[in-house]
Length: 485
Image (cartoon, rainbow, N blue to C red; front, side):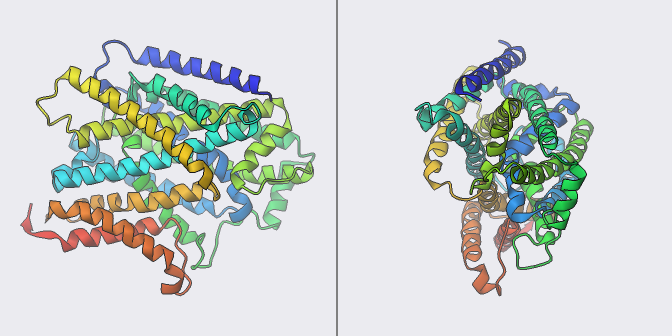
């Protein structure tokens, strides 16, 4: 596939996004429309679109390649995710709807105080900004290395173009636009996945059942790692999957903003239940895709790259023109589906929780709109900056890096929400919460670094999030106030 072909795909795809944006963002759109979609999003549309967001470019690129190093052990995380979705649907969503929240971190103000709210919002902003930028980085990196590098286009210019495109179609409509563009993104990803799997199967020269049998014999489809010290120990993966889903989705403004745009709790719970099933199915298919990619490479004498993130792209772009087009479409969709919702949710959280849009009587609607647009542009610039700065440091699998960062930033959020919901009658010294939110991740980083020495060879994986949450919970318990609320 030539660079001109990639540009044509970009133009056509971006044209569809702009068309959706114009339909969903009219002149009468208010700040409430941007933040909540006027709470009129159809639940089945939200559920379908969320699949693209939850999968993202990391799943699209990293999970198939992850099979080479870790077999099917990632499925433990996926099964944990499945359970975690129902925890969100039947424990967290009722709380959010009962309080009629625009930003979920407003709960922390209600429960502990304003400093807790701002601490929670800042933890989300740091985590989502970093995580989404790294997800988008992977998309930019692949497009640059395979297409635009040879044309002499600088990496930062390509990054600016892609971020600028996302900024344009989310600028006015916010979450209402994102809910509907996610439908396009998810459809493109699914078509790319299905088409690629079909092309690989046809190009194998042997029945797919034979390939899967060989993969099982070779241990490539091993799910259960029984070594408790290993970072891929099954029950560690499962617990991490549950906690990760609750923290990174249920306590994440990006994901919950879409759920809260549904008109009522029942429909939002339907959305999450359908999402759970689809997510389990799609992740399993991505793991199977990893097997097909490896055996396809062996059969066709393709040398696989050292970086596992590049395995999918190497094979898809070398198979034939159709697989190359499907790959580019799916890759762009995966990147945009993660970044557009993140950009909108970051703007929402900053405006609602940090700037107190809902509690500041001095801000009229016009002033709020100007501030909100400025904040939106600033976050787009921060996305750009993180992507460009990260490039020289890209050595590990992106999925490992994102999970590591999330474990340190979402952990305090999980600890705060758990304390608030479990210790229902306990008050906390609100002034101490920001310090706890910093000390807990710092302590977790030190424990993680020296865990093999301190814990008889034990290595932390994503379950570092649970340790971080536990330390936060203990800190809140230590600084509880006498009496009850």
